[in-house]
Length: 238
Image (cartoon, rainbow, N blue to C red; front, side, top):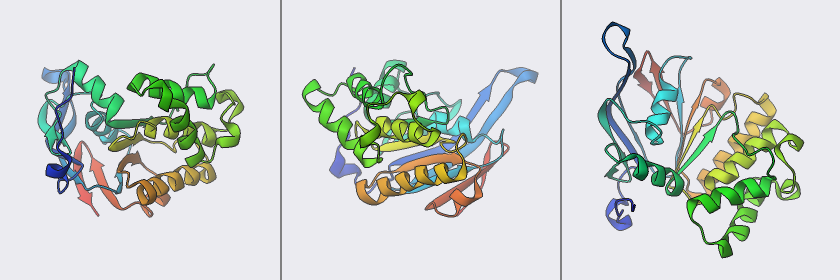
C-alpha cells in the first residue's frame, strides 16, 4: 500500500511536523486516563526539539502519536503538510519504515546480530535494494563513529555504542523525521552527551529534524527548541 504522495516543492515551506489539539484518552468512564489534553506544536525542518516533563506528563504518549505508533483520540497530526492521523495500520507501518526514524531508550537491537547486521536488517525491512544496503549501512555506522566496531554484537558494545547503533539504524533509510524517546536515560552523562553530539551533527550536516523526550536539564540547554508538558498539556515553549 502506497503512502500519500508528498510533493516536495509544494511542502517546502511547511513545517516538517505539526500537531493540532491532540488528545489521548485511555479507558472510559470513571476509569478514563487523559494522557494528553489538546497538545499542539509545530516543528520546522532542520531543528533539534525536546519535549520535557516529569514522568506521567504525557511526553511519551505524544512521541508515540507523532511517530504513528498510536492514534490520537482527537486532533490531527501532519507530516510535511500531509495528515497522517487517519492512516490505516498498514499505511502507518509503511510510514514508520520509510519516512520516520524511531529510537528508544532500551536500544531494541537484535542481540545475535552485529552492529552492521542490525543496521542492514533495518534497511532490508524498509525495502532498500540489496545492492545499496551494504554501502548505506557502512556510511551511517561511520557517521556515528562505529566503523571499527561494526562487527561486534550488542553485548560486546558499551551502552553509548549500542545507542549509536540504534541511531545509525534509525537514520539509514533517510527519514524526514527522527523521533527519540528518552534516548540518554540509560546512559551516564558522558555517553549521553556523545549521543546528543550525534544528534547535533545530524541536524548540522544532514539537515535532519529530530524530536526527543528528555528530563535532563543539560540537554535542554543545547537543543534548538523546548516544549514543556505538565499533566497532558503543553504549558510552555522556548
